[in-house]
Image (cartoon, rainbow, N blue to C red; front, side, top):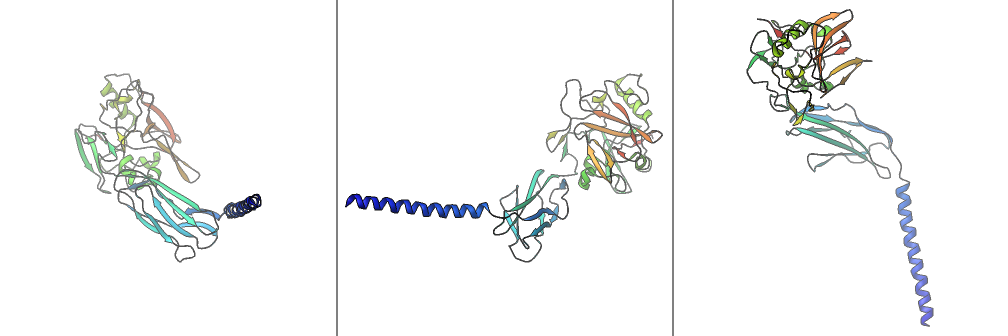
Length: 337
């Protein structure tokens, strides 16, 4: 009798385990066979790569065609908030307006689309919070050291300049009516300056100031080096460090350390490696950040203009030629008296 009861108990246990397994398998199957949403979640407008502290941005998700009226929520790397802007099947388009943090740094906003029976879809916007105020985003640039302040009457921008004549801008020109902003982010204009074609650069400087000729760069290089063998349209050997400044961008060093390059900034030009860009097929491609600094001269040769440039690994100030209408570089203005 006990053996029969024991046998019956085993049968019941096996049956129970089979039911449990079947239930688990059913749950697993439901998860396995959830559907993917049709389309790709995205924002109707790209978020700028750089934003001003406390700036407000508006995000509107789109791109999912099935199912309709998915739920939308957002979360952020700078706090634990989660904002639902549309419940599944609800009204509205899921738009949200957000104030970015005041503290400088890199942040991400993630938007999630969800619906019962479907895998979630997501899109992220990553950006850096910066400030155009002097000695905030860019630190240790020596802009205010032994400087003269010049206001551009056209747009009100203020530039720090060297005191002695010929007087040079210690900052890259950011004229509001010309050139393009770094990564199309206007907040970067007074941080990196704007990027100009050679043709734009000819008329970009304020009244009383002008685009320096290559002879002006020669004169400056001779002055700080004590050498008189530098000539126009040839590289200046062993003098790049006299133009460079050891500045930080959001507390990260811009010019990487290289033993052969001794950075002194004895010219007072406070050069930082903001790179260059090229217009291609209707868009502008930015290159060389933290590696190159490039400045137009007033000199030209046919379809090309001459520019002076510095590379992080080389202690020479080099000379290059770029197409007048498609290559873009920074501009420093000079005043002779």
